[in-house]
Image 1: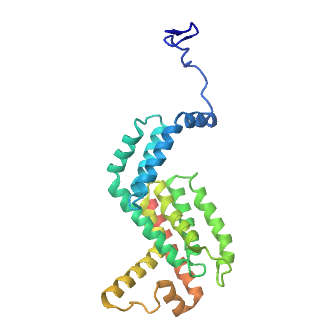
Image 2: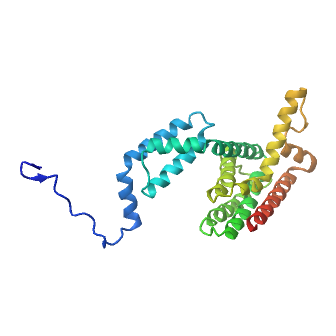
Image 3: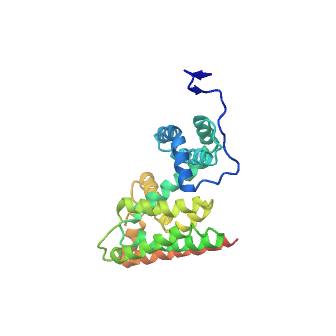
Length: 260
């Protein structure tokens, strides 16, 4: 049917030439982005709402990644249905991994007060992760832990005892996120458990301290935490060496696991 004799909406269009050259990825990205702009807004709003209880953030991240990958492959259906289906299907394992990442982040924050401990342990962990990704064949992704290791090596010049710069709570959370999330990006969450060994030790000591204080009414460790106990026994520098030794043990275990 033509409108005022000008526009015939029932007439078929020219279609797409099957022999037309493929568009470059740069232009294809923006074409898909603007085509799916409203769907991306819906997806992000849905993600934010599902993250409100905090404990469900892991499942929300998983569902967000699932729908985004489907959109990239031109396979998505309804955003809401796809998101909620992935949210339900992956809730248990995603929530478990999310809680482990939160525990790792809090443990790293506790270790951040000791000069060089968090940065030194993360430096060794990044070297181990770089080697593990190289063994597993993820060569492009190995660049990220290599770059972080280089940055941490420079930071340690200022963070080693006596520290003139400290990573702070946000910096420690970032380091824990790198140790935990990069292995997850290649589907090897078991490496995060090994590479975060010094942080797990700090977190376990804090957990035992809290349980003992609640049960007995007195602290289990007079020093209050693992890094404080190490400072009392061997001085401030001993914390750095012990944490790096634990990180090295975790890195070697991760390399051995990657070879299996």
